[in-house]
Image 1 (cartoon, rainbow, N blue to C red):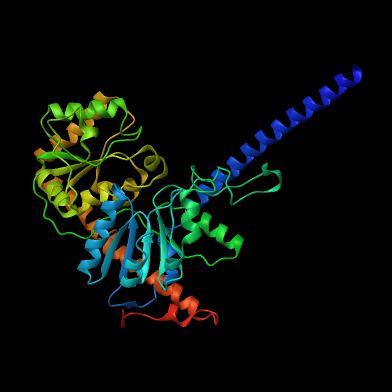
Image 2 (cartoon, rainbow, N blue to C red):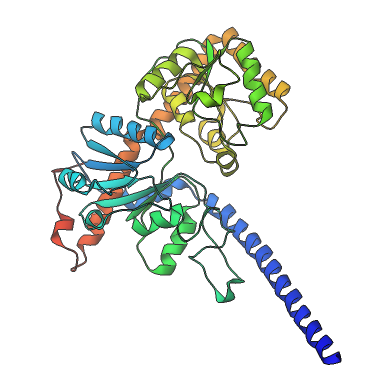
Length: 419
């Protein structure tokens, strides 16, 4: 009996020790990982362009954009409009290369951009064997405190993890990494990914790209209406306080809403319908004069923008935004801000205060709109991003060309070179 009791106590002690080790290792890992995030965010993201700056560009590129519905589909349309303006060609493919292999090969793209990375994501072998570069575009944050299949140390107790909170063996980011020649990452912490590539001994090509729109030239009109566009399906923008704020703005008769009708049931008077043509949407934003920019909780907490800020700036509107760190850092005092964490009465008061100020001071409102518009045109247009991506593509081809085993077909270009 005593021996059984002794064995039980020993086993219990082992279990308790096991749990303590897991707890301590998790705490230590999260502590170390949070520090890595902080350090990675200090790096100037423009430095990621440096390896590609001297790469000459061709006069024309042919691009496949693989995307899905919603914001990604609209983003692809903005890219297509920008490319066509530049004399380039873009073909948009929905969701997967499967069933489109012949169409893609006949198009013969220079590079492929894909925003897809879910469990069913697939790039056909015929496409991966093609001469084109494949660039995976990932719009979400890189967190470092989640276990994943990239880091499987002894017994899985002690780990340092570098990827998004949904990562698993079939995750979006892992799938994109597996098929990509280069990465287009919205998060600032690209250094964390670089460390991973260094560990596995693979060349690392990446750029920071944020959701944006093609360049447009608008004159500021007048601050007549506050516009909100898109879907509201996150706790940050679907919170009761924000819904009440929208209702309050609706009652004032100054709100216009565009997007999925299901998100604007409580403000039917403000709902103006869905607009699938990006140019028409920007025209509406410009005509209304003011855009209310809000972000999902994940966007907000990680300083990642949606393209709503870019649409508002491209349309040369007065912008009223939540205090998303990206907006504050990049657009500064060209934007008016409200606090998305306060009660609806305070939130409404802040937004209405900005609206009243704009109508009392239309010239100053114009100055702010023009300033935000200039920042957009200087730093964030789809045209600029396409050239950046093309330079990364050329860098990849240059690096491949020094390898004797590389097929000559992969080094062929489809047009004359130009700066």
